[in-house]
Length: 112
Length: 113
Image (tube, rainbow over the protein chains, first blue to last red):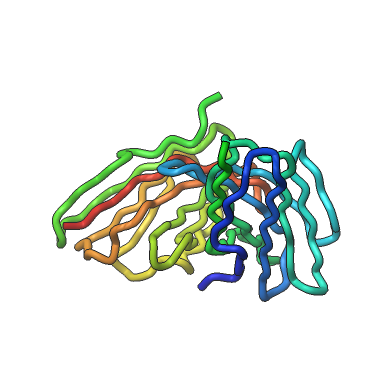
């Protein structure tokens, strides 16, 4: 069963604009990760934020985590056409296996 | 170095046949995961291997599905007596340990006729 709910399901913006995607989850987590998937390809890891962290940056990416609200957001600043892809949040539960529970994803289209 | 390699990239087979999907993880990665991605169900965890520990098979949807990991490296996911609902992309990921970023292969797209 899916743990994460993402919104919006689809987002279309102009190049240069910022894109924000949100993710909510239900149970306690060890970490939350964001992945990107281009059509027909595997997932590419973007950023991992642990449950004791509140914010993390990587280049044009900013991720926040609010464990009290069980939610996270991914912000992509100054978007580029190459950012067009599907973005998934995934929660790593506190169990030993580290298996990920994925949300349904947000499809982002960046128009040149 | 090389990433996670999966083969075949595409597989079309008739209902009722058995299929084997292969995953070659990144060298030195001790943990290996199989996931399934389908339109209706999204991305679902199937099975997890970590070193010599017993695998976590809690995500396998039926006893037609099995997987093994030989020598702590290559893994094979086997689906027996395939059904149309098995059609999906099967993704493999490896990582250095639990609660670390996972590195995915490009998947095997399985189509059951």
